[in-house]
Image 1 (cartoon, rainbow, N blue to C red):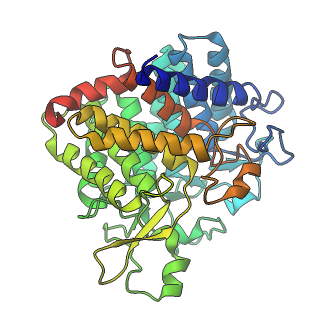
Image 2: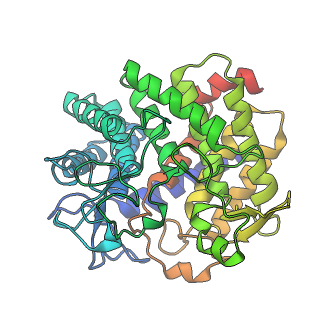
Length: 447
């Protein structure tokens, strides 16, 4: 067996036996609908089971994609539609529209994270992402109509017609709000209130790309083009990393000239997130390919710059893996590592981006080399050899994560399954997969 075939086998085993067969049908909540959220390191369903739109939608997306990947097994279809019904009947607000950010297990309000009945554009983006994938799989007109409803709700309530982009915080009544609004949030993400952000923007780009593949709507195309340009030309700093938060007019939020204490307190608003950088590089290439933009050398150049910056500044040359956070301190041209942990999703996005760029730029051996190093790091420090699935972070830095939850509201199967399925398809170049069509689109410009 050659090295490529050996790696394909490893990825296939990590995907099916390490993830899919561990999670499903274990997380199906047959009593209350949707999917269980909190699962222990050894696969025990835990007592508290809040349900957030992001993870609920990600399960639908994963199951729809796996149904396609495994040849349309009804087993996955049934579990995906189980989640679809929960999104439609419980997570969607039948009075004001929009997906609630969070519900209790029985679909009522919950005190978890203080979101109450609030809505987030980020969460609604993932709801739309799931629906688009499910429609692509089954061409069910009810699913497409619901997806259109979500799209128009986002456009009506979250879009900023003056400065473009999207507001993130919305009340139950679908009103964007900031610190000056009469409604006062107690949510855990309240320090982000009043800002536009890269994270909701890149995942809205992702969702709109998925939807555009199956629904060639002119307004959707216009908004997708606008998001791509905004992320590429405004959110990405000259050095090649994403700025994270912005004022409404796209002035970046920065604490470079603040005190050390204030800067640390606002780490979440202002740092270099290497994982988001190369994830966004992939999502931009995916979006431009779906739009079929001819000779889009600008997007390819920026995407490459983002991955190259992450390799040069965020890679651990000793143990391997990408660090979680860097920072350009005032007066310095060097990116300092300020958070040296290595979360699981960034490593998953790393193998996806590195292998993708190795295919687009076959003469640049760095990408294939780092892809192999990244996979070795994942095998050594992220994959759980006892219970399966992935630890939440690299145990070279956080050994206590061996006993961390396998699942919580921010951790499920979306990053890992997408990365593994894409890598298997890319290593098997003849596979009929969207990722290989994306490579073919960009190869003439990069190779």
